[in-house]
Length: 236
Image (cartoon, rainbow, N blue to C red; front, side, top):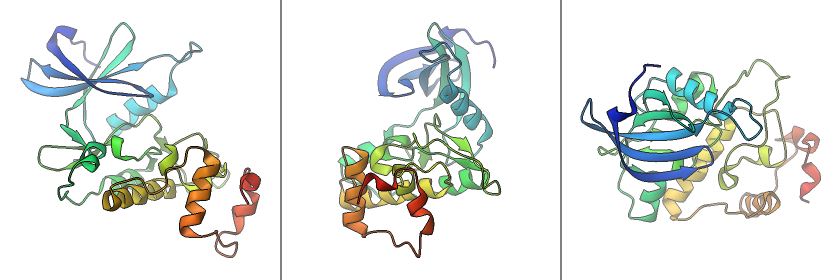
């Protein structure tokens, strides 16, 4: 992390706010270029190091792809850390609310999975769009390395935004893989076609009910592990 004076960046306006921090549009005066600055906490409410912040920084530093949002700089501030990121003028979420222009084919999720990473929060608001209609994946606060060869490894079920959350997570599974990102991607594609979210539940139970009503009940001969999931009795 290089020691840049905060005066290098001229803050313009707040452009976003989420669970993991606020995002501002700014000008990098040294390069005369627009950037996005995401302010994140270094510690959580219990005074411990914020794992989401560390995961996001590590993932952004690890990933080098035109389909992944690039990190330019990191500097400390009064509230924690500021991540200086590539600025993108739009998100898929905003584009879905207007007329959707054709977007380029994207390979960002394949790149992450080939790198051994699960994003675990794919949704329109985390998919940014450049001036040239290039879609870039952002917000890696929930990203996690996965190990398909280790069948005993457990992952948190408290991930992903409910409307894009895979059924195995809704049923409390701690053994899952990159399929959770593919489920979310499918929900995003359906939303692009329909103009509204495909599964818009207000609770986990309602979310499962909507999925089953739309796609039908899972078949045990295709998914025999279903009955052993922690919250299998959540819905009948």
